[in-house]
Length: 295
Image 1 (cartoon, rainbow, N blue to C red):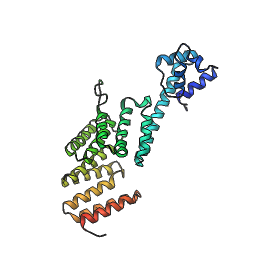
Image 2: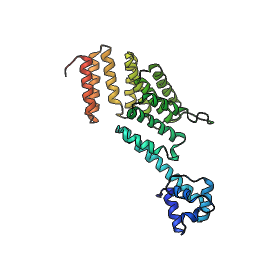
Image 3: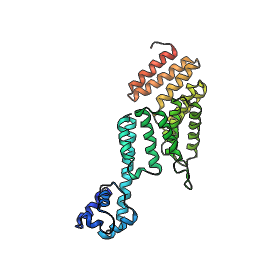
Image 4: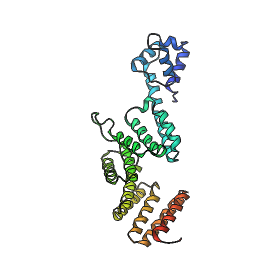
């Protein structure tokens, strides 16, 4: 069954009943409020919805079904668009979209609010170049709703924590970054079910990078190899080329140049399979610098 947006459905039913907005609003609410509801700018309360249903002679459950279906469809479409724009690194366009969407009531509480805060912080970092502001916003995310009874950390909380750790790493706040990476990993293991298996890969890669940057090459090597095994286990190329590169960099820093060269070759092959020539070029340039070769 295909559902129209709630406001449009209400408008159609009202018109079929031969009522104006003013007539429908009489004794219930203001005409302006009916107008906002029909434009999906406002979600009616259960009391108002009940009165509207009675006046239009429609079962209130019908409106509830429409409202719930539209809500789920809208939330999913917004999240898909956000993820799509972020993947393309269109941060300016994403920022405009986030600022518009965050006004919607569906994104003003719970996990959906956290999702918006998470991506708004990412945009602030890349668009406004205000890393400290982005970091403070990310710190808010996992702490929303902590006082609610039975609250437990969700995948969104862990993703926010991971983004915070990545940003702290980029800013050189290494101890806090490492702590948040480990906390995110521990919390992920506590979840009864994980729907996005890429989360663990993001954490492992971020932590591996941090270890390399702080000269813990053996620790980074072990984490990178763990990431590669996980990629193989869940049959994904996501971050696999990056993990292979990280293996190569660590081996080079440890003086194991022949093994490093093999890892760099594997990294290039994966990026070529993904048609990512930019990373192929970057790997080769870094290989030349690390191994002192001229391929």
